[in-house]
Image (cartoon, rainbow, N blue to C red):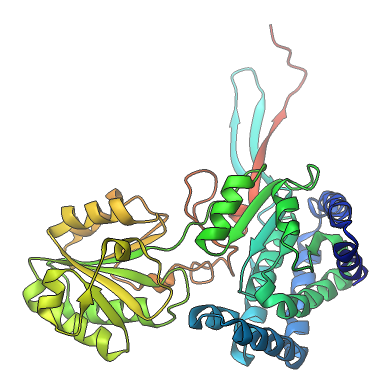
Length: 432
C-alpha cells in the first residue's frame, strides 16, 4: 500500500499532480503487461480477490461502518446511504461477481471478423484492450470490485477514484484486489486507487494524467457526469441519470403490470434502473390506473400525478413540470395518463435520458413498435426495469450503464471494455 501512503502525503504537501502522473505512468506500463496476460493468470487474480473479500468481510464491514457514520453526520440521503451500505449479503455478492467475471470467456484476442481480398491478403479484426481506464464514481463501494475486475479481465489497467463517502470501504475492497494481483504475479499497478478525498484528483484524471488515461467512465449523479463531460480531455463513456419510464399499454395484463411496476420502483429505489415515471394509456386508465396507484401507495411510494391521476386517487399530489425530469432515487414516482403508444413515445422522447424504458402489453405489434422506436440503451417488454444491470445480463458486473451512442451502450462489461485492430496477413503482395 505504498502508493496509498505516497498519494496521501502528496495531497497534503501540494504535490498531488506529480504523484498522480507517476500513478498514470505506472498504470500505462502495467497495461502493456496486461494486454498479453494469460486467461489463467487473470482468472486466478479474480478468484483470489473473491476469497479475500469473503475472508476479510468483518474488516470490510467495519470500514463501511466508518463511512456510514460519517455519512450520517453529513446528512447523507436515504438513497445514498442505501448505495453506500454493505452487509454480509452484499459482500458475498461482490465476491460472487468476481468469480463470475473470472469464468467469462477472455474477451481479448477474439476473432471478430475474417475475410480474404482478391489479391490474397487475409484481413482479421481482433479484439484488443482499450488501454488505461479511469473510473470516477460516487457512493457505491461495490464499483471498486466491479470496475477493477472488469478492466483486468479485458486486459486493461484501471485507475479508480471512489467517492469521499465510501473512502474507507473502497480502500478495504482495493486491498483484496491487490491480493489477487500479487497471487497471480500480475503488476499491482494494473489496478490503482487514488486514495485521497481531494477533488483536485478528479481534475487531474479528466486532464488525462499526462496522456496516460485512454477512457474515462463516470458513475454518479448528474453533477459528476456533467463535470466529466465538460472538463474531460479524453473520451468518456457517458452515463446520464436514469429517468426510467414504464408505459402500461391498453393491452397490458393487469396482474403483470402491478408486479412489474411495483418491483421496478420499490425493489431498490436508489439504483439507476429504478422506475421514476409511470405512463398509463388513457384507453385502460379506467381499469388499470386505480389498482396501480393503490399498489404503489400501499408499498410506501409517494405518487405525484397529472389531473387524471389525481382524479383516480385523492392521495396523489400534483406533479409539476420538474417531476417529469427528476431522477428521484427515492420512494417517489411521477404518473401521467397518455394518449396511447404515440403519447408514451412522445413523453419519453421529451423527458427521457436514454437509459432504460419499459412497455407492459400483451400486444406483440405494439411491443415491437415500442422496442424499435424508443431510443434508449435498454428497452424492456413485460419485465422489471431493475434488470437493467450488467450482472443480470450475464456480464458478471458492470462499470455503469452507458447512455451515449458511440462504442459502448447499455451495461458496460468486459466486451465493451475492448476495442479492436486489423491484422493483415500477406505473402509478399505489393500495391501497384
